[in-house]
Amino acid sequence: MKSNQFISKIPLALVYLLLSFFCKAQQVPITKSDIPLDSIRLSDPYILADPKTELYYMTGTGGMLWKSADLKVWEGPFKITETDPSSWMGPKPMIWAAELHAYKDKYYYFATFTNTNVKIDTIAGNIIDRRASHVLVSDHPDGTYIPMDDPIYLPADKPTLDGTFWVDNDGKPYMVYCHEWLQNLDGTIEMIELKPDLSGSVGEGKLLFKASDSPWSREKDQNGLDIPNKVTDGPFLFLTGTGSLGMLWTSWIHDDYVQGVAYSESGDLKGPWIQESAPITPSNFGHGMLFETFDGKMLMAVHSHKSVNGRYIRVPHLFEVDLSGDKLRVIGRYQP
Image (tube, rainbow, N blue to C red; front, top):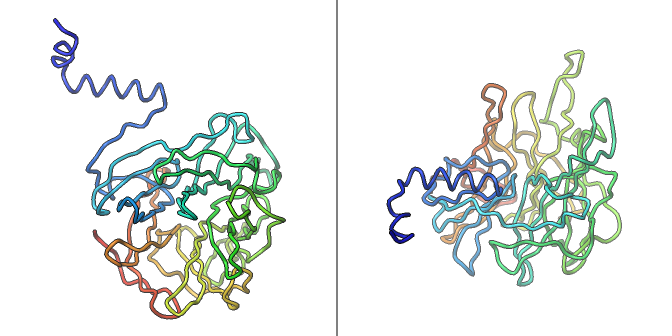
């Protein structure tokens, strides 16, 4: 019997089982097609609408990639990064809140990488892993994304996360990121200038605002008193139709994960940043970003946040928004 005849007689279920074992052993994701958006489990979804390929590319925490032509059904996940195992990240870094940005004929992968084998600090009993925002590059939106020149973008003794990209009024590129509350006990959002090709950073980071600046993010202290929440998460920059510079960012109101927004009074990254008085989405939706569909709709991608038996379940969702005025307005849930 020829080998291909033998293979054709193997039950498909057995083939899939063998493939599953192989992929787990090799840490290769099993790719599927026709996946509805709400069937994907993904934190911090980020969607790049790429006009060159006329495809949507979605990534997020975990570092995998999904592709779609219509936002309705997706194909994936695909592994799209190659990091340097001899770098500070180690051989198998955790990847959080990955983003894809097209810039000057290249594609850039902004993400948080964590090496759990390296500890950088202990604050209030919390041992802090080596964690930082970093940038990789590719010629194609679906990778492979590889490291550039600088081994680090942000200080090694400072846990940073959720780096995003913005070109400011001065024409220079910047990374906007969070300094994690675990170390400073009042999470911040900061900015740092990037080299023209984004291959490294320039100078030192500058403070934009603190979690405690928000009037809506709240928590209870050990005495049960209501105080400002200390978490900053997921910054994302945008312009309104009238040219106002806004920033999405996420925190908590007690046990509810919520999406807030701030606006720059000066119109550039340096601010000062004025916080809106209330969140802009329903409770337990957050870590948002904005993108325009190929047919001209402005959408916000977020994940829903639900705890089931102590385990977080996070699913990507879309909201339609209006940016025509001075401020972002959420229209409602969007079903592609």
